[in-house]
Image 1: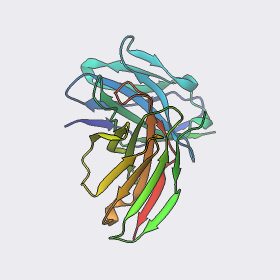
Image 2: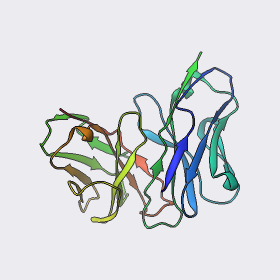
Image 3: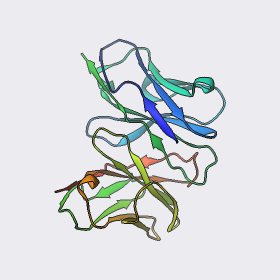
Image 4: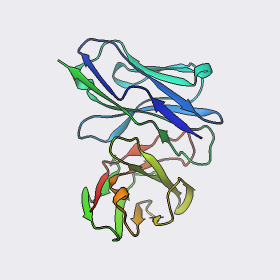
Length: 115
Length: 114
């Protein structure tokens, strides 16, 4: 079955700490990978995406993620978090070249950054 | 550029009733997808519409149905509401129906079924 696992449900960090959120997927084919973020009271928005090429992708606000095909992983990282990074983060996948852009999401990680 | 909008923001219905949720796509987007996000879960794909035709469906029963109009706006209809239908319903639009199309999400409609 197709699925996405996010290992951390709640993460609490102090400002300037480094962040790594885990994401593993199970999918019978070639995938596109995404990280979405939902800031308090705002829409779900795209943080970064991987379709092909360099497995290290950079997104907005200093976030990056690395696709490791052998581990079916797409972990999100940021060297130094800020209070404004407090949000819920979702990892998602879909089928590359698929007939639809159906996204399969993980259950999300709630990040709280303490000032 | 106008983003994705959804109405209403909140809705309370009784079990057994029917509900219609509405979505206006981002300008120029011909594909709309609907997702259900239960509390503490990630969004789950309900279905996608492309140029007024259903173009993919998730694991939801037939009482979940939809429409897409010529202006690419969309409706999600749910019949015979059940308590488990209580969730945030998200609409997302994109320029393409395929996997590489970035999806832009609306703010959602919070449905409570009592």
